[in-house]
Length: 154
Image (tube, rainbow, N blue to C red; front, side, top):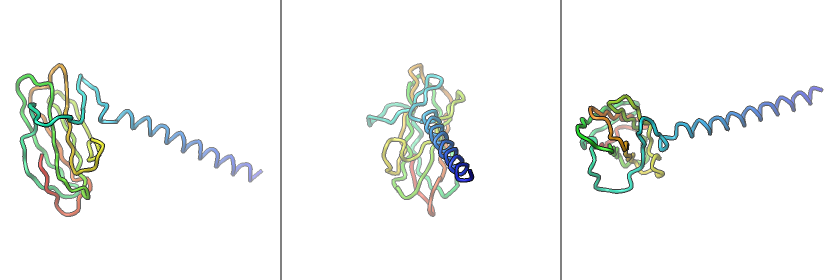
């Protein structure tokens, strides 16, 4: 009887773990930042160079573990895309990016692997066929896993 109860207990633990993994996978799909579609916005990996859309003014900065840096760009006029390019080039360190629109949407968290490769760079386009919001867009850069000081541009 005790052996049967132990086997049943192990069975229940295995079932619970399987359900947890299944739920975690479903949750990951809900929060997959490549699939965001809210308020008409979508986030994509750029497929062309020489973009003629607004982007964060190119700035050189440094960051350390746990530090947060903020950058902003004012957008006026009709555009359908906002381009962000965070580049540190050192794959041994990890930075995280989050973007805030003036109309109250938050995009992110984005990590190095967002575009499918770990190359010390997070590059993305925030698109809206109806036009992106005019006003101040903010970018939050966070030193997620940094040894010493990491140089980067955004």
